[in-house]
Length: 280
Ligand code: WAQ
Ligand code: MG
Image (cartoon, rainbow, N blue to C red):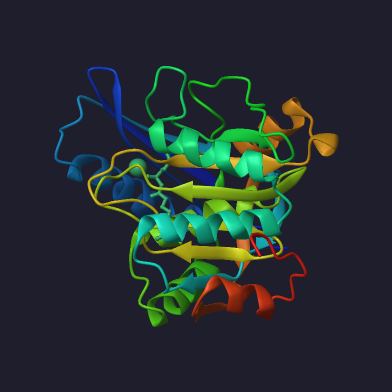
């Protein structure tokens, strides 16, 4: 594992106390200056001008505990219809071991805004994969994954692999890193995500079994509801340990996985050799 010094660079921009944008990187000292500038330009690029921007830099010496391999990426090009794509995503989640009720509950909560006040959460829901019971201590905010990034080399390679599949959006690159960190969390079974950006309809299901399975259209265009549900095995779950992994433990992604398309969920499940066939 790479033992160079690393710094965490975080940017948060807000206006009238409301969050506008945020981003975070882990970099070697030689990149510190350019990455800090890059995140600052990103804060200023948004159409709603921020009145408050914070760029925080922390030395992570001795704090990089894990190096990871990114999840394999599969793009399913079958369903342009969100309802059909959601049914496919639900089947995948069940194949990873999530109960039907828990899957149903996650879709329903994410569709209407999973925070108790009805809006999107800033972080993820944590759900008992068997019962769907919510386990995150703060249901308004959820749990936010932080302190993860690609190494320079792995990041470049991953961009190339994604670009070869026509996946050129920065969000895919970032969501894959986030999902790869979450997939290493204690008790993790699988995750469901789609964006809260009204123009961005893509989402994914991820797990160790399936890798990162991307759906181009998990919601209708114009829909501003989105979020993340992380399903866990409650027997292996400890809230304090889980939160500390997600929010504090620094993780670098040093190796890429495979990246390829597939025609549909049936074919995909057959390919990965899952013996779980839900809904049939
Ligand atoms: N940790 C946990 N949850 C988060 C985090 C985080 N760091 N950041 C965002 N969320 C939650 C929060 O509830 C957001 O409302 C929701 O996820 C969506 O966030 O092309 O763009 O940044 O393959 O809008 C997925 C598909 C896109 C990418 C995900 O998420 C692709 C995306 P967004
Ligand atoms: Mg968003």
